[in-house]
Amino acid sequence: MLRFASSPTGDMHINELRVALFNYIVAKQKGEDLVVRIEDTDQEKNIEGKDQEILDILGLFNIEHSQVVYQSKNFRFHSAMALQLLHEKKAFACFCSSEWLEQKKEEAKKAEKDYCYDDACRNLPAELVIDNTAPFTIRIARPDKPIVVKDHIQGEVSFEPDAVDSFVIMRQDKTPTYNFACAVDDMLSDISIVIQEEKHFKSAPKQKHVRDALNYDKKIEYAHLPNILNDTLLSVKGLLEEGYLPEAISNYLISIGNKPPKEIFTLQEALVWFDLDKVSKNPTHFDMDTLKDINKEHLKRLDVKELSRYVGFADEEIGELAYIYLEEAKTTKELKSKIASIFAVKDISDEAKESVEALRRAIKKAPYFEEYSSFKKHLMKETALQEREFVKALRILLTNAEHGPDISEIYKYLKNYLGEIIK
Image (tube, rainbow, N blue to C red; front, side, top):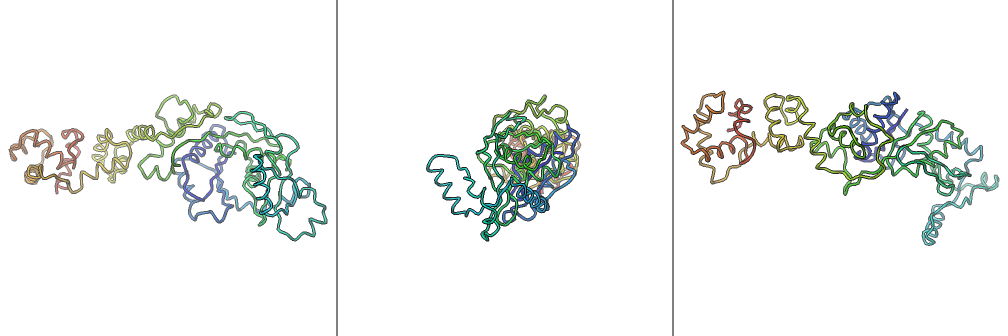
């Protein structure tokens, strides 16, 4: 079993989506299920509806999963596991106040040392613990030896006991901390490999330490994906709203840090060649221009009727027209703007107004012409406009722009809409 974990505290960003894609691919390659875990334990930060938004985005990107698990539903298991560790003296009650701990952290900072809990409460006599009415957290005792994490991307890394520390596993309100909840949940879901962002790398030894303390003997593999660097963190929703296709976004995110056999591919095609062990461990920058080029190629792959829907129609002729405009538009938003401009009220300069109006009157009176050459010949005769003036005026009238695709090319797809276009 593999898992994609996400918190309902904000928009899903591209690093998260990349993690989801890689988990899906590896799950398919291994023939294992993928579980979606909604990490909703931080009730104050949770945003209503974000959990469903996460699931909707995964569905939009065809990332199939077998079940959805809400971390908050496992609280009883977290408590039971913490109690077991207390009984086995692998964990202890910590009565240190927040103020005291903050003071210790400041002292370590001034001494230019990494902060490490001093185990002040680890060996308290039982009577002091029982009779103590002060609020307390539960800490797991630091490991006796280094914790070794083997990572598909980062390699093998050893963490000294002090780096793991006697960290808190249950807060004063008796809710689990992130690392403890994740470790227990991974056990409950029988996770075989954890693929996540590089920022969680230092959490891996802590979670392994929890599992070791609970005598969980299944070895869980790790793969921490290097960061995608960018000046601003891009949300998946934002990219979709800007007119990028899910197929193109997937294509680009899978390409980053990989060497695909071809530039343009589908998620299903990636299942064949993707190799987790060959993912680069170097961070990369998000290149919007590259994504735009990839998006354009995926737009070209769409069926004409499907493409027309992206620009607000359900018509094959408009789909064909949209294909022509893909020479100058790379997103559905840009493409929709181009098509919408054709049917909008025309922005005509004073210089072109007279010739455009002459053409408008002539077209309204003209019969239907199948071929552009006949249409042009008739209008030039009726308006007495010279070639250059005629073409400029007609382009403005039909496309609302002075430059663009060849009029003879777009006429075949606009001829049935002329009445609506020149209104």
